[in-house]
Length: 298
Image 1 (cartoon, helix red, strand yellow):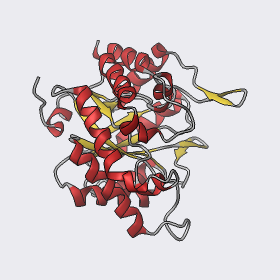
Image 2 (cartoon, helix red, strand yellow; image 1 turned 45 degrees about the vertical axis):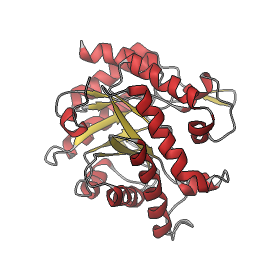
Image 3 (cartoon, helix red, strand yellow; image 1 turned 135 degrees about the horizontal axis):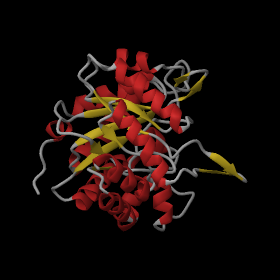
């Protein structure tokens, strides 16, 4: 099946992304404690197997295994010189899994530091790191980009501009991570949903929303409603990738206990609020995505 252009497909109804990547890589045989992004080169079969499980679950798109594959993050593993290769391989692996019928989003995660003066990263360094990552992903054949788990608007803006320096055509999704803040939700850097929409709506993105964070499922539903109201006049699509509920400690390990059916119920409420791009983050599995696809499509 030939792919419709992603921008066109987004206007045709609910669009399902995949779920958590890291835990699924470990379940598929990846060794803990290593750089997961390097698996794109050293163990591509593991990565492909995860993508295929999500596609079998009903995902319309998979997200590349490149969350930490910017040069600043890779430098901590001594892999900065492999930035282009890791990202290109991640995109090609995902493209191999999807074939022509479905879609690949190139994943850009936070650099793990803050821009000066709060942190040590200069804006020109961050821009170069994201641009190099985007170049590798584009070379590998992505259909669009997702900038996710962000907490600072400034980093999102640099990432969007970096991607736009590489391609002016492919869609960009921007997603922030939110935590409880009284009766509302804010990112770790204090960004409110309305502020995020105001500052990003003219930046060249196609969709905005949320993933990860520490909200419970009712909190994610409330957040979706706030975002839906904020974007009403912008023309942006609303994206939602909640965790499988709030993490609980089991000894020293954070675990997510929300069942696939319970996750699907809440994701359906989020869809009812206006989210058109749906997926999962920490704690979600192909079973969670499959349950959501059944619930929402039926």
